[in-house]
Structure formats: structure tokens, C-alpha cells
Length: 63
Image 1 (spheres, rainbow, N blue to C red):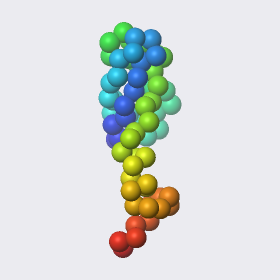
Image 2 (cartoon, rainbow, N blue to C red; image 1 turned 30 degrees about the vertical axis):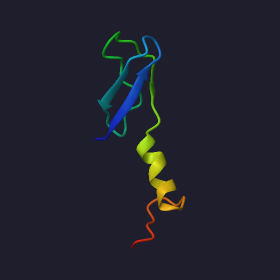
Image 3 (cartoon, helix red, strand yellow; image 1 turned 135 degrees about the horizontal axis):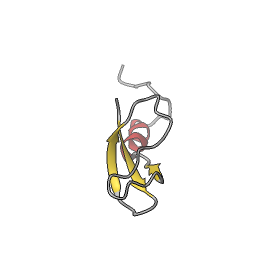
């Protein structure tokens, strides 16, 4: 199961959570227990394709 980063829209706390791929809802905030949480954009996923010089997913010019 992947680890995702979330931000609470209620209190502003950033947190990580292990979430099942088939989960339908975002997890509640561990600080204020609000359901108003939003998944953050991963910077690692964004940098990966641009550093290779191509935009195709799963393709490597080294293989």
C-alpha cells in the first residue's frame, strides 16, 4: 500500500497516511479529526518524468 501526503483544510496540519489503492475517501486528520483533508501533489513524481527528458510513463531511454 502506498504512503500519501495530506493537508487538513480545517487546521492546516500536514500528515502522511498509508492508504489502500481502492480507498474511496481521504483519511481524517490525526490532529483535529476533520474529514476535510486533501491529497498533496508529490514532488518526486513530478520531477521523475522531466529529469528523464521525456513525458512518457514507464519508458526509459536507458533500457
